[in-house]
Length: 320
Ligand SMILES: Cc1cnc(Nc2ccc(CC#N)cc2)nc1Nc1cc(C2CC2)[nH]n1
Image (cartoon, rainbow, N blue to C red; front, side, top):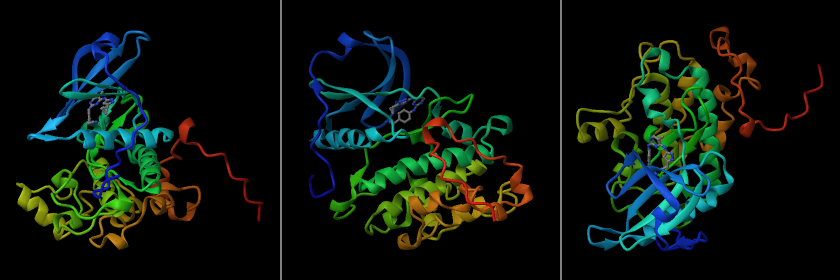
């Protein structure tokens, strides 16, 4: 671990034989960043589909192997959580490190956030997906990892139709919490960054919780709450916590959902709900707060629990 919270010890074998000896690249490019490109591929031995993330080792003349090892180490640590994308193999060439990752065939939830009516998420969908996102983030935070780039483009679906489960991806900006000293450059994507990032104040797990507040706002309304005409206007909206909670924007959305978002879009990081507190919020727990789920919300029949997230039922309370 270095002073900036980068994890550097990894256990995954780094394979030197050519990636193309074991995988066939399919034409489809799944995503592209400044220093990475992601392509669909098939493992020759099994016929299984994966997503190969090609990461450049040298960026702006600097050796960035440690940054890449940090991403690998976080993926290894999160192997135990069903909602963090799985890491299958790692290859290294002269210029790149290639992460062979689980393929989430449903793509980015971003597309459903901005879809029109019949393809957009229902509140019931968002409740189910929010519980999975919070389960994954609570796991990372329990292990002192902050993601620092949570946004709809980095939350994938195993299947879009029928709606599947989520996978959290892209740990390129993630850090180990207990070792962060300072933030030198503004991380993350403008629309989703927390106020403390803009003020170069210490970051914490609460920084991720702000981004989750923005994410849930976008999933429910299709609107990005702080988006301005340019970066400066967006940053101003964030630092002023300038948010539209109007009936218009939240038409047909329960007041508990608005209450949930308001518990996260709070300027003071210490006053923001934690991932564990979010998981206990009435909006996500109709069972334990029936009185709070008025008739209007009852149209959301109980969100199904998918197999992977159903907890063993606690014994039913004895009848009064
Ligand atoms: C069908 C699909 C469609 N679009 C994306 N977009 C995308 C979003 C973020 C990043 C950033 C990252 N990392 C890369 C691609 N990923 C897909 N499947 C993936 C993508 C992956 C692993 C994460 C790459 N598994 N399954």
